[in-house]
Image 1 (spheres, rainbow, N blue to C red):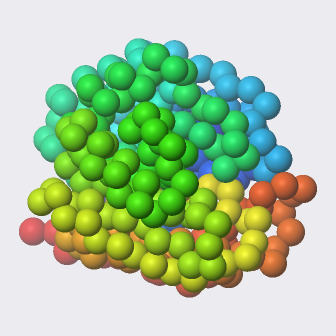
Image 2: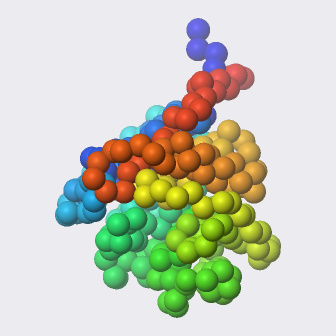
Length: 277
């Protein structure tokens, strides 16, 4: 007899053969937080801990077919969208998701890798703003990505606030602007909510290069907590706590020759059981 389900999270993102970012980080995060991970591959970056070597595109029809196959069978409680690097892909994802009942969407506008490599085509930015920002429950840009979206320099906390206001005016519902690139002893991220209020989150900066996939991990963590029924503010708070612990737990691990991954399984949860009606 089937009498319970797992909270399901769909990750629509790119690939990382080194296992630290992209769909691999999403699966690890979602699983570690007790949810069931389904996936749609949007692109095939060839990368390792030292950087991105190449990016191979996935046929658009293959992406839409993947989304439909998952959504028709295992309807998620939340969706995380990561690497979407062409305008055609943006249109395809947004258009396909519109066919289904609305669920919370966490959009990580992946534009620049931790290594500094640009991962998005220039003409994709307008498409992201027009199609994905309005349907996303929350977007999670880092400071480099916020600078691209706001068309301004973003290197200080005050500039983060200004950029957040500019991005909010583009039609975003909620924004979590990540402060991980700050050159200070503590880092402050800013959560701009639907009521245009700004909430700071401050943590001590961990001295480590092992931050590969931290943005992917955060967006997946927020989606996982939303899938569990947490409200958005709590999901944002818990997601950041999870990433901070994952970085701290993996700070001294040597994986690869470059920026290593987080320890996603520092305190894994058992799969959460939701009783069926």
